[in-house]
Length: 315
Image 1 (cartoon, rainbow, N blue to C red):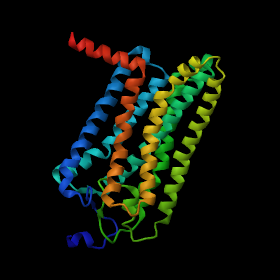
Image 2 (image 1 turned 45 degrees about the horizontal axis):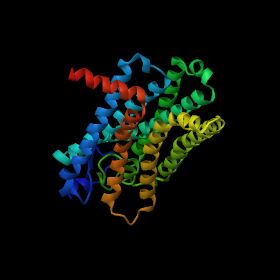
Image 3 (image 1 turned 60 degrees about the vertical axis):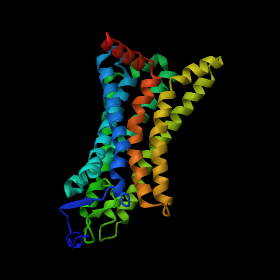
């Protein structure tokens, strides 16, 4: 390791991202599935946006929220994967201090936006099932836009302390980050200071965003299930709940990898570092890949429109 990476500094001009330490020889092979997943995520989410924009019948609250989710997934995967691939393919490990903080901010704010959009979609399902006659008057286009703006502002504001706190610490050990992106905790661990305020804020943010969002989603689905079980026949139960399956799958696609990744990082101290980093990488790509697939397969309007597009191209 070069001496320059061990020199004392308070504000490093650059950080060095190692990618996946211990698996450098396999970086090219590891890049293949990650590149394929990124391509699928880009294609799938752009397809969702294209279909909703082109089809006037899809200009409704559920599909507006779906477009917000697709945009968030696109930016989320793009904020980390291209840099990861540049490390794997071109050994481009340097990232400027400001770019590192920017990437950190986007990762945390976009994670909160994804969760917030799923809460908005849960509210949409609740109104559609429990108060169907008021759905069109409750979730108007201005209301949907306001909900989207609130989600963006909440996540954007709550993510600001991550780069702010990271920029305030003195760094005097090394500028080498054992990761493929500027993960907040991986960066602040390099600081020569008491970083407890950063770790406390991580817990506060998780409780505020993920905890509260999970609570509101649980309340929404409790009310939805109560309304469904009051329907007269089992067929009506299944048909009504079938409208929620895509959303439930989208929730699981986001929260299960997040929960698994958090548990591994919290309790997997005996696991190899490269395995923990691989798990983190998968978490960043699983939701953007699965969300368009789930809605493309489960949502009749999107599936029909997609088939029509393919049939039109063949003719």
